[in-house]
Length: 105
Image: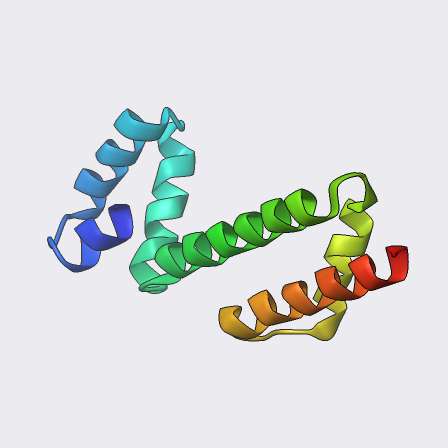
């Protein structure tokens, strides 16, 4: 919301900082640092959250599919594949789940 407030609604830094303090409970200095980052990196906060949401969704899908065979270290091995679009990440996770299920069978 802060990224959108700054860049679409034209909030001032002070308005954005006040909003962050009110809604998150972060201290003002921390909120100011975050707001400064949002000012200079348009869309970074939104793109971070989209990536985070995808990552959590894929981890939950893996846990559900594999049950007790799920291992967090195994899941994080996908990081070794490097930077990739989220659609490719999701496909890689699906492939890794299928492979792990085949090996366990």
